[in-house]
Length: 134
Picture 1 (cartoon, rainbow, N blue to C red):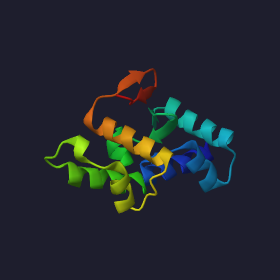
Picture 2: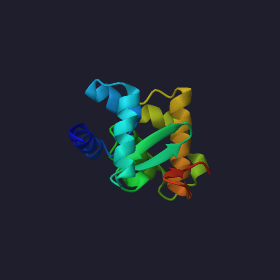
Picture 3: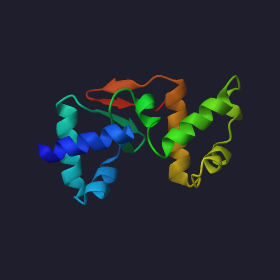
């Protein structure tokens, strides 16, 4: 469990992580990273959220945790500033992504769109995973 403690501290610092983030940061395989994250989730330290095809392991509630993420935290803050009193449909995702330094490729657009849906709607729980699609 010592490595899992280090992984937990890594997640605390970033808010939310993907399996690939942990594997890259610690120089371990993805299955090994997934095993550590699963142990921490099963022990109740982390929550797993599925955002489309990507699973994020977070400490606490999803949006609060994602707001700490180095990349998506800037996006969430920009959305909050732009959406203040404006309809969500008036936000241009590609322009907003560029404004916070994210190249608007298809995967980023999809993740950004799903983050927006999650910010303004409810998610459903499926077992130990919270799925945000609507």
